[in-house]
Image 1 (cartoon, one colour):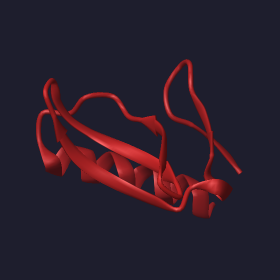
Image 2 (cartoon, helix red, strand yellow):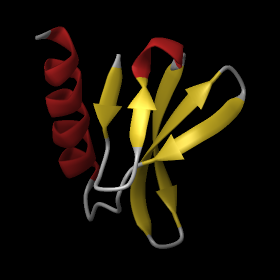
Image 3 (cartoon, helix red, strand yellow):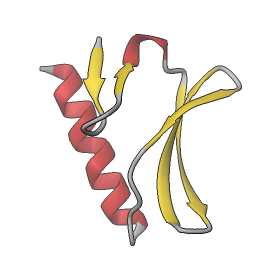
Length: 64
């Protein structure tokens, strides 16, 4: 199932094996992995709670 991450990126969630909320130099991002390989990352967030809320909303989109 493809999910729209932003205006330029659609992600095949059937192939995603894990997600990670990560602190990077420009803020907080959610990273998406296929096995060991990072295949996408989200927009930048100010707080971990914001990233968690965004990820939960994305997961709810998948279960519809």
